[in-house]
Amino acid sequence: MSGVLEGKIFSISGTLSYPRQHFMDIISKAGGTFSPTVTKKVTHLIVSNPNIQTTKTKTATKNGTKIISEEGLNELINSGNEVQVELTPSTIAPPQPTETPAEGPLSGKTIAFTGRLSKTKEEYADIITANGGTYSNTVTKKITHLIAKDVDGASDKLDKARKYGAKIVNEDFLNGLKGKQEGSLPKGNKKDAPPAVLLAHSYKSGKIDPVGWWVSEKLDGVRSYWNGSKFFSRGGNQFFPPQWFIDQMPKDHHLDGELFIGRGKFREAVSIVKSHEGGDRWHDIQFMVFDIPSSGEKPFEERIELIREVCNDIKNVTIVEQRQFTVEQSIDTLLKEIEDLGGEGLMLRQKGSKYEGKRSVTLLKVKSFKDEEAKIIGYAIEGKGRLKGTVGSLQLRNQAGVEFKCGSGLTDELRKNPPPIGSIVTYKYQELTSTNGKPRFPTFVGIAIDKTFTEKE
Image (cartoon, rainbow, N blue to C red; front, side, top):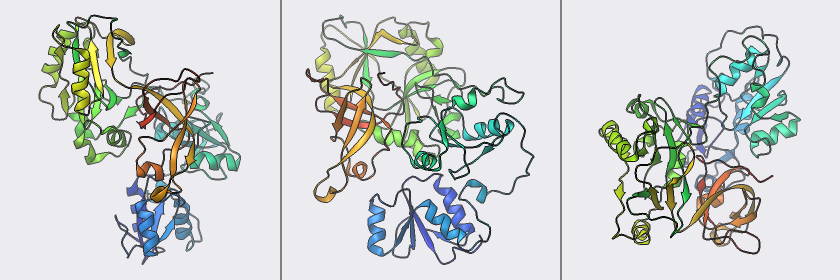
């Protein structure tokens, strides 16, 4: 494909199937040039969905730049090639020695993936080939199976798989191979179990006497558990900070906390934490540590002191301030102080309590608003004025099965590029209506990457 893109200048908008560097390497190898911004010299803008308007697509349209999808780039490259190539990492990686596929339960099957799974794609690719199957980076007419975390979800890959008649299955399709033949599942490749984290109940005025309890700010970051070598969400999904971030963490203690940028910056924190290529943006992240589960049998006061010893000099770790509640104070007054500063609420911890890996009455959350998770099931296209034709509100279904609309809290960019249908999001609200149980005044908070979601049967 050398030289087929000579004279062409490309830019990228949005999130594509592979990291941006991957496409930059392909363009360069094919003789093209990459531009980080859309200038008048740019000839092509690559986007995930040409029908969605962004600042870059508007500039490209104004400049007369061609707006193409990944498939469009594929067509440009293959227009000058007798041998067709696909835009996968194999197009820029050195050729690997080929082996005769092993015979096994996956013989004759070609399998692709979509979404974040419990193992890396490399680990699953090894399992597939060890069992006689073929792994595909992309969804083509040749694939027989697409493995997805949510088989009923919505994405470009899922839509293509349905169009091509491929079977859409979950990870159990591969995990069930264990023990069928030698090498079917490499040892040590078991799914990382979700950490047993301490979860809070909601505070109800008059139910407890808070005097003597420990009070801290409830942070609007991403809940994260450090197990001595890796970071995980409370649901067991691994986070991927740069190596320099990991190297500074203690290897002989488990820590519980929040990956946090600042008050009111939850979405920015999610954007960094959920990416496998967060890079230098992790310099903005602080791991706000509020507990040390590896010493969970000790009373909370002793755990506070141990956290200070373990985490005192770590650059990207901040110890969450704890203060003991006194008779002269008022929960409502403390809550107002935090909310006036832009904080989310308060956390109350019982004096002398242990760290329990479950929801416990020894930990209480205090907030003016309630928050829950819901699944996006559709969009209402009702934007007006400058937002005409964009998403006016998200159509959501919460874990109780109640469906409702949520438009408050959506930024202009989110209205133009909303999360995909099937995504799990967090919303906050004041109370439920007595007639149909719908949340009153729901407000979008962000994508829920550290929460669990189970729909009512």
